[in-house]
Length: 587
Image (tube, rainbow, N blue to C red; front, side, top):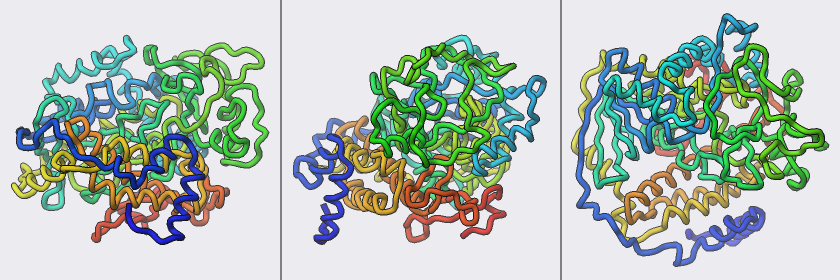
């Protein structure tokens, strides 16, 4: 632990007492103990690791819904495509847990695409990007029809349906490879690099264009299936100069008091069913309403977002909800919808069926509302500020639905739509781009950084540092119900991890090497979340400040972008709502 003066020590001590929780106290309490810093008993020797090089026009990183359509559409546009994934096709990340997909059918919907977009904007309090919202409406049905042809709606497991178009097109797929670096040469993207989890091999992948379909991420919380997502793509892109947005927002998916690791979709249903389509139904959900109730009443009783159960919310104040979207969702689907029906409710029910008692917000800690965080797009083609680098789905900060959950099923549909858009755009870009050249010195630098935890003779285990991080970031009054003094206290700890623990992570094997890189990404993401939350001095959608509880339209009709300064420090700027970066006057 770094040296600190008496006042600084007291601040940290007070913060430790406040955070509470056995996990946080145990981790933080052992901060300076020798037991946390141990010899690295290597099971894999770095010198035994071999190398493999591959080339493609378009490299797709990630194999969920966005990655599927990115690969297919890039291939169909004439590009040589390769897909690489940390997990298994259609079976990792958040894709396999999503069971509703939005399909806008102009023949049956009462709202036009323009009216749909405007209604989403009202619910999202202006935080959505209307171009990406309307893009969702215009292309979702086509993507759903393609999924239907591939057998997507015939099983609750997606690997078989996803594999059909990939094998039909002979698209190379490399699974269980952890990408740790994006490569930029001469100011533009040149590929990526990572290591295999199943054999001792480093993969050097050269590409004219790269599409990040790496999903969102969190702090490996219990109760929501986001534990294998740690904002890998976002942080890799940030490190080579890409702009990032949306880190102040929070996803409010609830978890169960009983069997907390079981998935919950807001109705009490488990994710063991076949997917189905949804039609237009715009809401204002999955913000921090539950977290505010828990903060005010101590978390007693059964809690849920407005409209969930029959208990009246007696807590006044809290996050603003537009009156237009304040009514509870009716039982059953909307007219013209193909979605599944809500389980029947009984009079006097508290928590939804199957919840086993109380439900609490925060099961996805560290994740923002779908499509509200990720790389900043410079246009409607999912393109980043780095030439040749694209992103889609939860890896793109498109603000398709805004900073609150607005349209049911839009996340999965948005990933499909944006994957297709990015695939076609990347293929077009690659046709006019030269074959990338990567210097030997660049490869050597990447290899050294990638294998550093494995080569270290002693250090901190990724699990210990992750537990410390969770104890700092996950408390309700740090991540969800925010105020300046507590966030600054948390930031002091995160900066300590960044400066003195992240550089000393150790790894004895390839699994721990993966954990070391994931822990690094979570630390950087935590710094982003705290600093962006401190910067936004208002409350809006899924960002709530106790010390700034009202919306401030005069100063905050803007998104926050984050980028790496020339001196290596984290920099911030405001991009006005509705403007592209090349049009905006930044402040």
